[in-house]
Length: 260
Image (tube, rainbow, N blue to C red):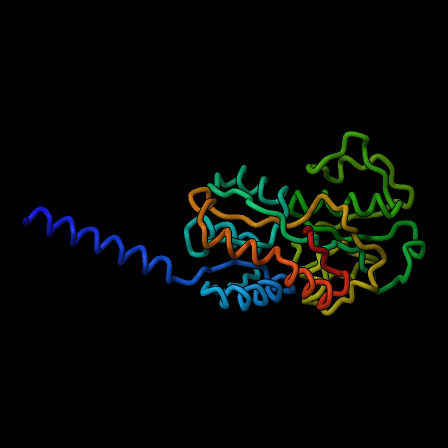
């Protein structure tokens, strides 16, 4: 009888712990800016199904995966796959991507020019200094016809892979958050949308934006041990719903592109 009671008490304790874990709100990390608005909208939909979610905004990209790794948050939605791959390689994170998110177009912005053709020879262009976003910026500059890249250029492309530079553009590599501020000192800057919006730059005024074919779509990332978590999977499914797609298309008018 004593053993039975002990087992019953243990089982009750496990059920209580499981119920507590289930009741705990999901903590979803996101970089400051428009991504958070989409998650807030999703959280309202999830609440109708009894899923409580807290959206946690970060101003430092590098903190988001660290917080996911140490369990401070349950998932994050801010990065593209090349950035995640690079972070895993450098920091040995036990993190995986589980679903596509949105394309958040990087753009070429300028205060001193209204068209690409107005960029003069010797122009100075600032780009992100992290490897994956630097490659992304260079591909966009190549699409703009401002530079040419080597035929084998890939996601690890850097300025050493520039094959042609007819305007003799000079590059300044800066932290992504500093790029909007650099516009007073450079001729153009290649800026991700979240930082452009925070700086009150209008994506429609960009000299060039990425399109829906961008390889750098965002991903949902979780720790490997949570990859099959049913609550997380349901929240992500709600994010990738027609209702959220309509919100994105209405709220951001094409400046953020759903992948579903």
